[in-house]
Amino acid sequence: MLEDKNKERTSLEKMGEFGLIDHLTQQFTIQNKSTVKGVGDDAAVLDFKNKKMVLSTDLLVESVHFDLSYMPLKHLGYKAVMVNLSDIYAMNAKATQVTVSIAISNRFPLEALEELYAGIQLACKTYGVDMIGGDTTSSKTGMLISVTALGEIEENKITYRSGAKENDLLVVTGDLGGAYMGLQVLEREKEVFKVNPNNQPDLEPYSYIVERQLKPEARKDIVELLGKLEVLPTSMIDISDGLSSEILHLCKNSEVGCALYENKIPLDPTVISSCEEFKMDSTMIALSGGEDYELLFTIDQSDFPKIKGNPSLTVIGHITNKSNGANLVTRAESLIPLTAQGWNSFQDS
Ligand code: ADP
Ligand code: MG
Image 1 (cartoon, rainbow, N blue to C red):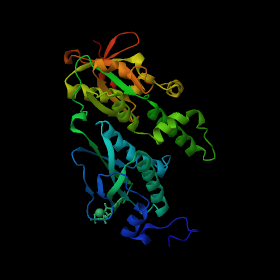
Image 2 (cartoon, protein in one colour):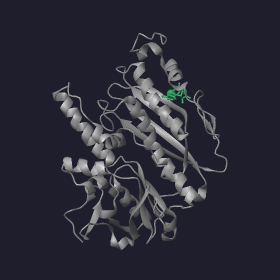
Image 3 (tube, rainbow, N blue to C red):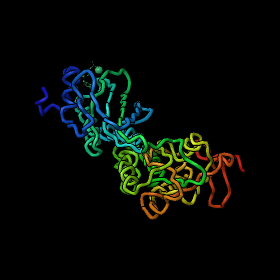
Image 4 (tube, rainbow, N blue to C red):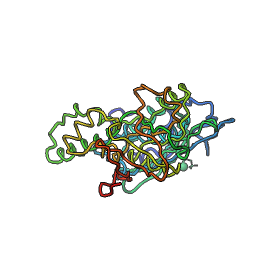
């Protein structure tokens, strides 16, 4: 049945659960010493020796977290792994394994799942992570995909959200707001397509931000860079919901305040131009956009010379006493309290 190259849609019913799992997982190879047994038994077996293990899970639901009308399944598989690896890197750990669980309806042929797993496999290969198991079940409505990521780290290198202290510098990687603006472009094209299916959208001018939405990359490189620079952040978090809410998490968990400088927030030129086009405020988008999967961390001031001038790292502010609160210092130098949605424009301090 699988050998029939003329058949483009192989129904899942014909395959059986075990045949399906075998088929989807056979291309994966094991890359980490800590993986003793991966897929194929009742449970995977891992050995982290003297390291600590970190673990994080995410559940992605169709129509809530992703829209298959513009999200190719290969990208979905890749992104589902990325969002989890990002959490592992935010602990300063090395990501080593993932499990992947899916619920699917029979509207998906085998070929669709092959696409999904091709994305998962590419992510695993690129990031040096082993796919060690999962679960497969049916769904009557949409698709669900849940990834659990595991990582390893020496105990004294773990970066919690709770370690920021007064006068630490607040640092962000890459640039912000791209994933959200990419989504705006894709949503607009979807509406245009509904009206005129023959319309071929020119996404070229938006390629950077569309890619930020469809193919995010977790910052494995930053964890490696910080290791090389011998910088141990005092606290760290990944930016999945937007800069503002992540800063508030750090401040709350560390019991500190902060000053974030609006003019320091790193923005790609495509984000600035698309914000102008969509009549959106780029600061607001960076603060509340989300899905950029960059890292936000704090360092002791004495570490500043080590990171100074690095194009991947931008100092965007500093940590203050809790009593000062978490504030945005605007270009006009006024202080505005940060809120999870960005800032509270009705409240002035
Ligand atoms: P059980 O019935 O004990 O849950 P399964 O038949 O579901 O066992 O799983 C058999 C093996 O295949 C296990 O190693 C499991 O982790 C793996 N597996 C099941 N579903 C998936 C999936 N969607 N992706 C990757 N591995 C899977
Ligand atoms: Mg199972």
